[in-house]
Image (tube, rainbow, N blue to C red):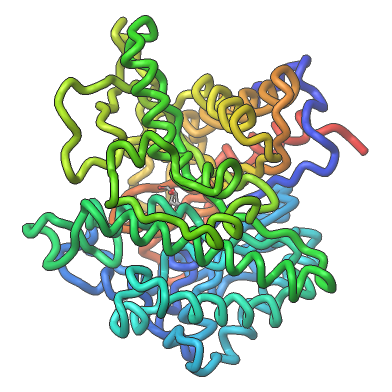
Length: 490
Ligand code: BGC
């Protein structure tokens, strides 16, 4: 299996198109309590029995904290122009709070990483928050459930990062997927901090209110953070700042049934417009959400609404798959977050949404990706930075060393062939403005509550070896070849 280079798409992407790999601190760094790092909510969850599928922890993860130089060299050999990574808040400020001490070794580590990237011609895209809030803030006041207490702590953390790294980092992302953080952590209760209405799973929480409260905190604190950056740092540092949202595509189960067509749009609004409408369109939540959720959905004050609207320079987008969506005939349950719909693998004609990966929710669906990009562009008209996209593949859990067959990762190659050609088609034929693409992910890593059981990397990791030995998969080369073809020469 090789790169599917389509002649008519040659040069479809702008010469300065940014592409590379995305990772998150908690999933890769390891060194969870080394060099002054404080505990995060994911350290805590990982050390709680019964919470992680393979009972693993991210104590060492893939040791990118120790191996960053080797990793930058490998990334360079993959042809990457950019690298999106996140900062561990509790490495920078171990206890997290506005009056808590800064950890100089944490600052030093990220300085080293940033300098290494720049020395190798790789542009850093830095995410401030990829789900790992310091545990101390959770203990002190319930983290993001408490906007008033949380905001000054988050703003001070952001300020420390802008001051320390902003001379070299020009691409900032405030939050990664605020919706997944709140839904998985406060509705399903399977991610940290592990709260929900399900008392068999979680001691505390309320799935009918907390996800909306936490998301509101994320949106409002994002907006304040951007205001601070624009007023105090941008004039001299001249960077850009955005938020990264998640969103899969929703396609009607029966395209001829107006109720399914409506349900699919409602599903897109509950998943995507929940964040994107306030930030890019109206300064408020979608009407469909207000209609179903009433006062359980917080309200923006007039001042907040003004601040939130226009608070992201670009549209940061993570997306993986597509679902068929069917309307429901019963009233929505109190714990519903999807817009009272069913999400299915096949449509009314029995057609599948795509080939299975090694992850239950993820299937390859390039046509859905093109539709998603068009939907976003038509609704918001803001240039899109794809900040995550990728897949797992069955059969990669083999004892080391991995076989030729495992390293020739056909399923993943087909995924990238499909999605990158869909993206280039959206640019060339549909006129969608897309400026970046980050593969999820660089190496196999700690996939949150799934532990090490989901291998998303273009690099196979021997998790049993002390040095977490890296083996490039064939997809890394294919991605490079695809971009060499798709990006126009200067
Ligand atoms: C997250 C990543 C995660 C990936 C695959 C995204 O939701 O940002 O941290 O590993 O999806 O599940």
